Length: 464
Ligand code: ATP
Image 1 (tube, rainbow, N blue to C red):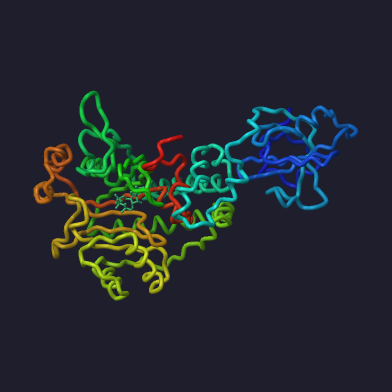
Image 2: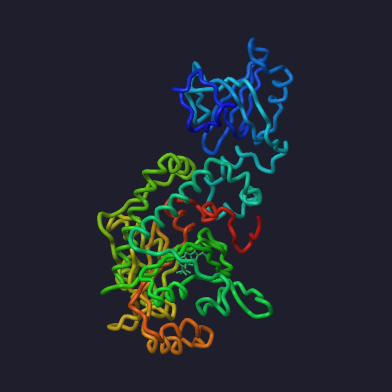
């Protein structure tokens, strides 16, 4: 038996060689005497050719007829000889070779009536207004039949970049002394004392799904792991049907002990992102080109150094551009877009950080600025006009933390395990939380976060 080859690894150098390949029947063209089958393996395609009753070919007319009628998306194995066609095969990724079919095996047949064809799925109505997109019947149908949708070039490319993103983040963090941890997702009470939680019945006791690993990663710091990170599911019971919110997403969280300032974390994360984007652009050039052919979004522009805009300056910039708003009011989605446009014009960057968010818009555990209690040591990173990650220095002193909890009207008993951990002393620390799907959306310029979630969960979708 010939060893199994992958379509992507075949080349004109293999001319005359007999190979065995596997893939899906993408399309067929029967010209009466010659049958052309395009076989697909991921984002790679190859044209396989069968000539009826060709001398020396063991395949019969019955074989020809079977292959002529085989349903698209069936999974087949072909043995054949590689050769160079007279003209380049423009419809395939392998343009300079074809396969003369000598043997075939149908490993798994597809049904004839596909709920969506790959061709339909690939010529997305994404050219349409992005807000219409996910209520469109076509896209709902695609998500309902995600296994077929995942076979498109676009989805194949997105999830390869997604894999690269996870790999580089983990590699970078381990290389900088971080230890990967996994924290519980079943929580007694509410995970951050917050409201947007999915409640579950835990053997008759109230519990919820974690809306962040925040409190646990801090407890790991108190447990003397100096730098920790987690990649894991995060659940948000937010009924917001937008193009950047999911009800379950992959959180990439990190927390670290700091020396002098929370800016140590800001710089580390900035360098992580710059290195990450550079590495992805290099390693996934082909995948990114496929994605850009759908959405036509330019590559990210980065300034030569980190651009930091403290919150009060950001408010002043917005006001100078005609925005009427309160000084301590949180940014709306529109504000983030407008501010990013202003920053892009001024500093020529799609990535920047806003620091010193007001204390009234950040959670109870955020370190308040000791010099101006209206603000905090909190920061958000913006990419292409939207928040991709959020972080802060945390309060590490038990008395201060308990005081803040009471000040904000939170019942200490609901987070007693967390508060108690600080009784035994905690080093100054800070961290960030980011959504993997959100980051991928803005890095690639996808119109909706559902594209970067394998099986998205939103307020209207709990299947497949
Ligand atoms: P937003 O204001 O966009 O709703 P948030 O302030 O609630 O986000 P955080 O709780 O600070 O977000 O979460 C940190 C990061 O997690 C965000 O910057 C984002 O990357 C991601 N994230 C938060 N909520 C969602 C969501 N519903 N779906 C996907 N990613 C999310």
